[in-house]
Length: 331
Image (cartoon, rainbow, N blue to C red; front, side, top):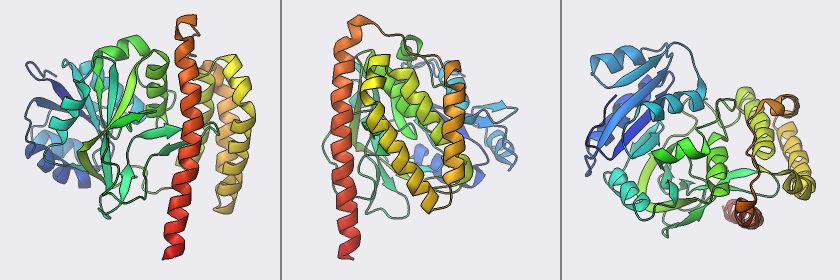
């Protein structure tokens, strides 16, 4: 795939997402900035997606099996030859200035690894879906702003990681910090790669003017299901093991343990306790196979900064959770 002369390649992973294709591509055709190439990576779809892509002559890589989100986007990133890549879920509708605003944001500094867009709920456009991803001392990753009024979150800021459902990345840095971890398959892989960027001293930022409307769970089909709960629980173990040095793991062991206990209680309440427990068990059993980020003294200041971000992420989660609860009570 060649994006010769272009600034960015939009990589769209697809698995049986035929119903989302047309609206997504129509939105891309309306973009005010045309400085991009498109590459779809099809994960062995069986719903006619491959035939649709060929019929419309859309550049695509056709994989024989489902390699998950991580495997698909890695193939796309490696095939791209542009300075930047935008990873875009197929169940999205980008605003007309989406590409232009992401490019403007990432070009502000060479220290920026990724830029997260302002993701708004597709069917409830008065509500936020994601204003950048955050991480906490409890070991909980969460979408900043989810469920809050979409009229807010208008200021650019640094976030822990970009949501890879609609974000731009500086392509050359993947060679330095590593690509998306294919052991994750899907879920938390964007937190993981953003975490590695932070360890290396790069920033992940939020751009409020890059707007995209997101259906959500377009591939998995629901907010909670056995597959998703188990995979996310396993990947959460990987995330901490890989990115935290031993001292940081010991320091955060109590809050992470508390977070796991609370999550188990939550999933027990909604019928997924067994799936969560199996995911955690698999995570501990296979974490040793992960490629752990080697500790380097030159990154010590970055680790201290990350610990402060985890504390702030915990405070922000409590505050946003309280706001959502208050909103429900008022109704």
